[in-house]
Length: 239
Image 1 (tube, one colour):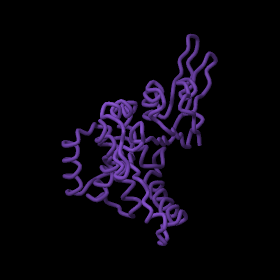
Image 2 (cartoon, rainbow, N blue to C red):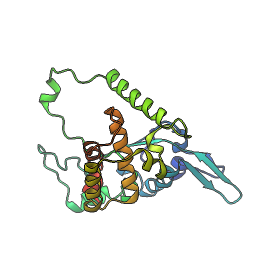
Image 3 (cartoon, rainbow, N blue to C red):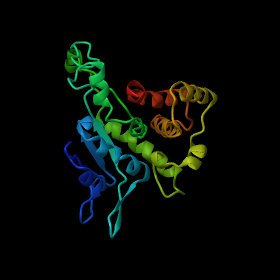
Image 4 (cartoon, one colour):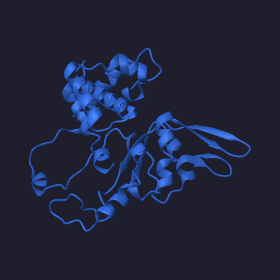
């Protein structure tokens, strides 16, 4: 787990220096890279994440040498919805202008957002929720469901050199992400209406496959696809 400061340079995040050294993305290998207040990072740093997120490796070139480091990590990022933090809050007025909000969110470019599979807005927690006596699902129960889904994927990919849905390539997507008619029509409509890229299409399929696995379903249904599409809400809202 790595959590670099928002003032971190591209060399410290990606890797580099006069004598090349691995950066935070490589130190997060097979772990989590958490970028808190992600919109406060420089745009150059954020844009430099695009290719490593895609390839799982990063190459640092210098005059007399080239170094390649592994960087297969899970990116988790968090930010406010605007500079003042109250955009969309029903109980507090936002003091930001549309231009300020657009400039604030512009650090997260369309190509970068296209590589983020789960985009979730977290609303204000209401008082009733804080005092609710109902017992939520426990972490151990959630862990059990995830372990079952991971076991399904390990069995599915036992003849491949990877173990999880996120690492599927186009050939595996065709083999393991077949949709029923309703799911196919829903994704077709979303692709046209939302202007999804080919990458966005592939990533929705992978997320839908995972949702189906968590549901214990061999087939990917319309409900699984609909949930996967909903996880790209910020991309549609700000780009």
